[in-house]
Amino acid sequence: MSKVIIFTNPEGENVCVMAPAPGVSIERAAADIPDGITWHVVDSSALPAEDSLFNAWRLDAAGGVTVNRERAEQLVSEARDAALKQKIRDAKLDELAFGGSKQAEIAQLMAQLNDPLAAKTVAQLDEIKRQYPGVIR
Image 1 (spheres, rainbow, N blue to C red):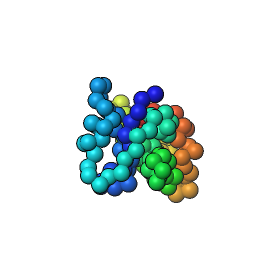
Image 2: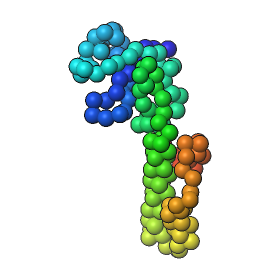
Image 3: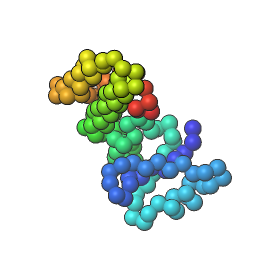
């Protein structure tokens, strides 16, 4: 595997991963990191396998990357909601373009979207990816 540089974005908590271009040394690439930012060199295989939750990655003091569960669940919830909203838009457009009623389908999707008890956890990520392809890469 290749070596990458990881550090926390100066504007927030997000982890940045910098892979040097071919022929560029780690030291040269690290020179582009803002002053005062602590960075670590790790093997890319040490990064979490599930990169769909990249915006939930956090850098720990030892230079390891962990997934912040609360942020990950928020991301999953946002992705699920975005997918449902897209399905609702598609159903409304189909109704306009091709006639016929899509009201039952739209009502079902709206109920799913507005269900406050709907579990939207990281454990559901694979199911959400399967149900709503393209929303989470």
